Image 1 (cartoon, one colour):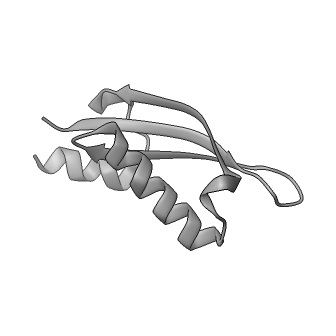
Image 2 (cartoon, one colour):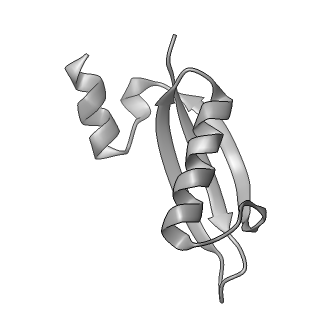
Length: 76
């Protein structure tokens, strides 16, 4: 059964930390973390060691803020 995982964190090593929130529809929490590390490392050219996870939580469909994920969930 799929879950919606929200990951809050920050990218360190720049002039000031960059705060982010990502949401994923995944089967396991580990899948969401792996996808987030891959995306953030690719887009911002940082190594995993510079990505600090602040919070990982499972959320309901009503709490989704990402418009693309929200639209995808409405289709099912």
